[in-house]
Image (cartoon, rainbow, N blue to C red):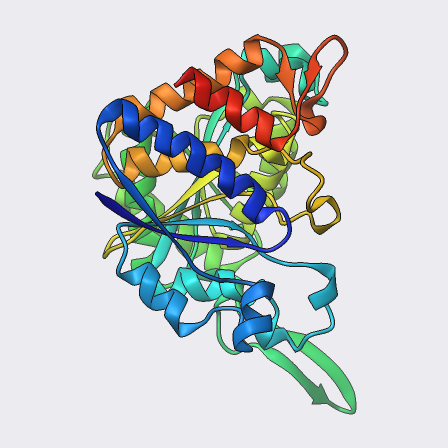
Length: 355
């Protein structure tokens, strides 16, 4: 029995999470595994009940579980709340509490969805990129930070900061990942301008000496953002810092045509890992049965692979999704001419039926 803490969150988070649970339960039946899903609150819905977006009871449940599955947080109605209690703060908080330092975000363009990409088929066909984003440092966590008055004017500031150990830790994850892919790693930084990036590059080069089989390259973040659109197939595994990884992985998601397709895994070297789609809560679509559950279903599949070492089960879910797409079924975000439009629940049912 695997004990999984589920924090579905706000907006459409509970809708896509329901479909992920459905597929995971069917997969568990096939492989003789049982999943105990324990639901807790996070984000805006948690603030409404507890006065905080990340209650202590949720933190404790997460730490006591075998893995955590997260939906999405946020809603426009919370935009006027003080920064310290806005739903998005819960994401930073749970990452810190669980020491989730390595975020793995695959960007894969399946042949069945090449036509859904806004880019030409010859550019995106065959794209298979793993972006490894450092998750607990950089400007999101750096101190000092804040807003203060200087010479009578408001000044906002955040500190982009990385320690040698933080860089070394994420670099090892990246090199190990590259070793089981095609032994190519691109480190993305801004070393021509930023001191912190110069340290980043120095440490990544040091770590590379432990992985002589891996071909290491470096690219400035602005160049990388352009190359992801111009020639994405040049990339296999990318490692970068928190803010650059946040931006680049969202950009990479559009190679496949929709944020609703991309999962992620946030890994810890000391305990529980967390799995979530990279998309937001889409509060304007809540309750309409139109959002794409594939990213959340794939996040569940990543949980099976990375937390429970069920590689075969991961492949089973991925193949089930491909089979449904081959049959022409599409949610609204990836719909194209001649395909069959289905809603959130129906897509989940179809995928589960293929397991």
